[in-house]
Length: 138
Image (cartoon, rainbow, N blue to C red; front, side):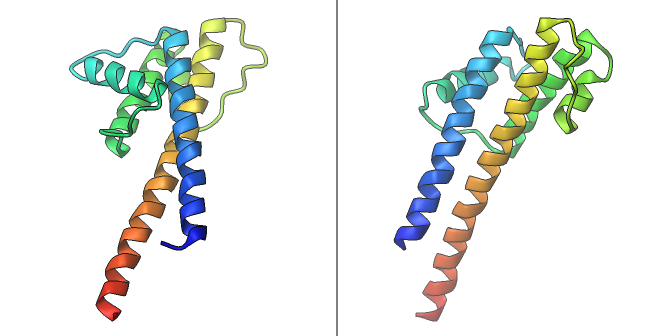
């Protein structure tokens, strides 16, 4: 593999690991509690992300489940705020409830993690595809 590709993959991995760790830390600070059948998987995976252990099981579907839990929890505070927080931006300048502010910040961190993980996954897929293309040429 070319050194520039390795360096880019390294940087993308560092960014994804960092945002994953921060997402896990902020999740547990907010006291956000997942509900339903995915509760245990979410908590275990967030603990792994917090310990920088693994991206195993962290795919787009899992990331969407986490986002839905953040959205649901925020909507319990104020109808619609969770929807806005996970799809756009929420101005918290005038917000008085510190829990809402923490959850809105968690939604922002989730979006940062989702973007970092998708970028890493896309780059890895491109590298794999290039290997396939090059093996057919050589």
